[in-house]
Image 1 (cartoon, rainbow, N blue to C red):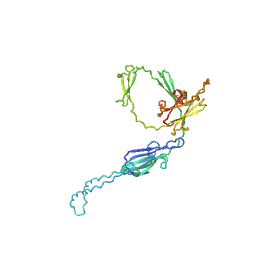
Image 2: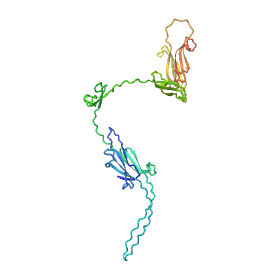
Image 3: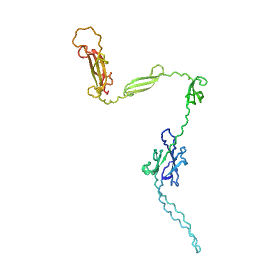
Image 4: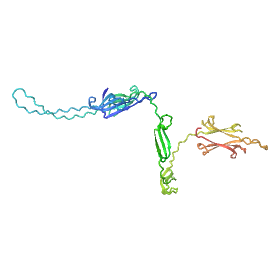
Length: 432
């Protein structure tokens, strides 16, 4: 098939090769033949009046990457544009009359005289306008109606607006160059033999003066995973190098550091590290031994961060704990947690934990004492709200200390001297 369209392409040759490999169920098949497109210069002649480009397309049947003449399935010609002809030159002046012939005898007329010389050529007409350039674009074509196994869409046309881009309105024609279909799966090949490499220490001797390693290799003919002597195809010795002469002792490197006050080296202060070789082996880096220094500067203070969201208050409740598993002689259970809903009450879903403060077990019965006043000492719990940031580093709101003891003096207050035990509960500024 031969088509001709105008063109002003000036490229010598361009080959497009696009390969799509289809996927199918089972093992992969061998690659199908590749579609090739070849562009060559077309001289002026019958196909293109003033020359152009010849586009040939076909399947690379022999797989050599070249579109041979026997593989060409279609040919199109993209011809250069023809400029308009100049105006005709003016007619030259008439030649001078020839000399008159001598009078002859009366009779038939003499033969006509020779034509005069041609007049001078007229001036060249004005140059015609440049022809329009022809553009060619290629776009990958997915497998579908136009190409069952995919391929390339080649579009061409004149660059009417001289933009250098082939726009949709400028396309004069297009053709699909499709990939060949996948070939049938080849038969499975026979399994190859595994190669095995074995290393063996080599003692000092004829093969290696200072010892080394013997590397043996070969195919595992009997597939037992071991390189046997009859399977060794070759070997090589990798020998240790000879022991070198002892080198001289090196000079130690010393490093010192000293604080650096804010100034030219460090705007916010820092540390200056000096280093050098201990030339006199004194163990001290002398000023004359310093080879260089490096300042390590403190970073400038950053801007204050935005204020954090309000924290969640911690809430504690106490209740009497009857004698049992938690407290053999009874006591108090302290329950705590974050007030997630900020209602001032510790709800069951807000409980994070509990602590048992147990009464001491009854001692041996003592001697009967004198009659006393009504009411013995009672166990008292004291809550102190404080700001123990050391014990609670992540609780900027502070903490609550819980102390338990016996109110020995009966004043209803747990004095410091009456404290038997205690714990600190950190108030949280975050959700539990």
